[in-house]
Image 1: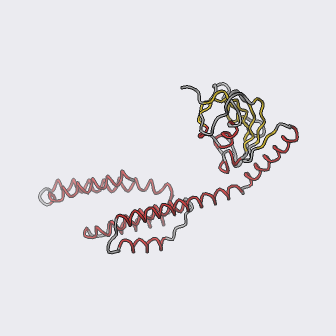
Image 2 (image 1 turned 45 degrees about the horizontal axis):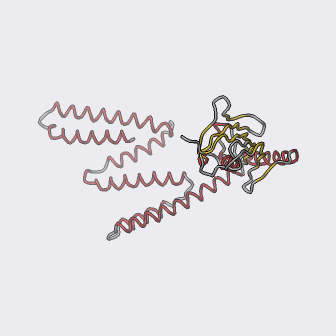
Image 3 (image 1 turned 90 degrees about the vertical axis):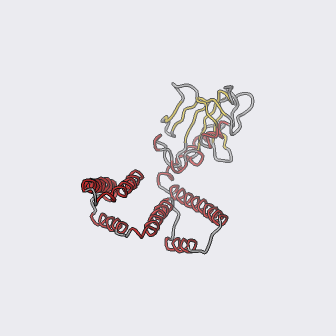
Length: 294
């Protein structure tokens, strides 16, 4: 769309430069007409293609589009400020649509009334603008977080997420019945230490060198360092359960981590890795080094 608008601006400049010649130079006038028609055909076909991607062949929607299009082009040149107002309104509508897609409810009538009151005020200071901007941003952050939490809660109640939680609870129940070495942290992380290692344990922002194999509860492997060598990463860059599990080990330590969904990939899962919503993950880990020398 940006390219299309720039193209329109370029054509307007060309038209202004050429109009003065039209009466005196019939060839220049004819060339200008040809360019005008060519631009209209080009822009129309491009928009037809883009519009059709979401409107399809719905002629009623196309007619609505044309009415809006003609409303702008039907104005006189003296109505420049009205056109600017239309463009601002269109931009605001686009922004409000994006906010609603994020789950933030917008009352357009109230937004328009507030806009008009602020715009028609006798004056406004830069300080007022900054204060209103800061207030809007604070409210948007709170509203966005509230909407995100509501979506997360809804996803957590989905059948697949509930089934994965039940499977995790059953797996841990069976594990504890068969193994007296199972340990559980307050966060809900469950782990079994094979070797504690020696020396200091990593902090939550340490860089570590690790061998690992990640599996589903059914034993199917979804990721592993086997065949490609140890992985080096900062613990801030991994899911909370993986980070907390490695912090229980010292250099040379080995353990199996049972990471519940809320400490893994949460209600969204990791579809590209085949990890479902709130799915428990099992990691066999070996902590090879902590903060290795570069």
